[in-house]
Picture 1 (cartoon, rainbow, N blue to C red):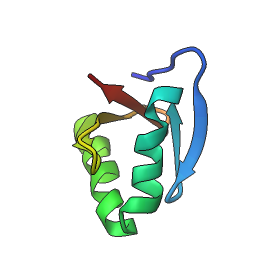
Picture 2: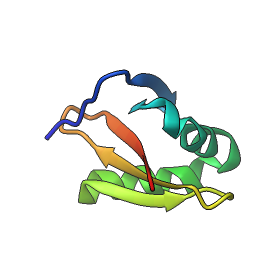
Picture 3: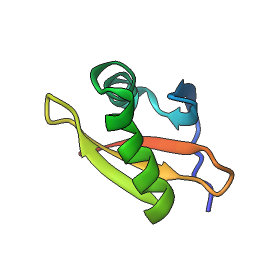
Length: 79
């Protein structure tokens, strides 16, 4: 299943294409700049194996990283 919604932005995070809405920008920044490569890679591997991975940033904002069947990811903010 591929998840796409209107008004999506696109980023490349550690080689992975990630689509996200504006309210998930802080999650993109967390994966890109706050975590080391291997720490962020854990979430991508888990999402690929299980369909999604939940995580929160240092400010307790909650996100879900979904793996799409086309090899891309969708990052959504929860709550």
